[in-house]
Length: 217
Ligand SMILES: NC(=O)c1ccc[n+]([C@@H]2O[C@H](COP(=O)([O-])OP(=O)(O)OC[C@H]3O[C@@H](n4cnc5c(N)ncnc54)[C@H](OP(=O)(O)O)[C@@H]3O)[C@@H](O)[C@H]2O)c1
Image (cartoon, rainbow, N blue to C red; front, side, top):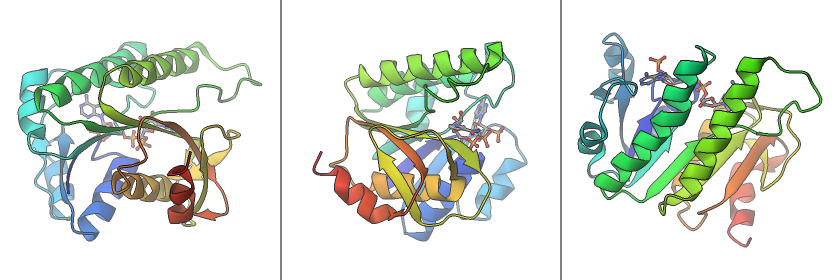
């Protein structure tokens, strides 16, 4: 299987790339800083140099050509509302357009719990981030692609447990990035799980079992 990752140098994206390479998949992705080439090469990935802010959909489509699936795990990471719009919002619009140009149907998006922290008074930047993410989710669901949206709760650097809670509605808590990456890798290899918005938290169900349970809903 050939997978193209937006956000391949990120904390989730790089973990995912490593898991996929270890299991024999072909992996490519967009990186924007020349020194990241070495990091990707360390796990056998060449990568495609480019910036999601400036790359045009035609060039992105060319880079993704021949992939079986796209994973979008890029994010502005609190860099300001304009950059959030450009990456977490328009970055997805652009990637959907490129996917269509390259005739790639399968599109996995790493999103967020839009209902996260409703009990707290969050700052304007966070509320804007949630709005942009929610808009991107909706855009992908209306794209006509073979989409799947994964909403992890607060991401942690703790080692993965290999067990999760995964379903259409979960309580927002936290989850290890290792487990997010392992779940994405397993979902990529489970094509019958499609056109669903799934919420992911730490939990006690082995990842394969949690995904198996989804094939019946
Ligand atoms: N933090 C949380 O608790 C949380 C919770 C739920 C969901 N999420 C979402 O989960 C996703 C992955 O999170 P993460 O922790 O892996 O984030 P991360 O480590 O900040 O990774 C973000 C990725 O996006 C890339 N990126 C940003 N701007 C770019 C640009 N202009 N062109 C190309 N690539 C660009 C980054 O590249 P560089 O390496 O060059 O910066 C990096 O690869 C994000 O979409 C985030 O919104 C986060």
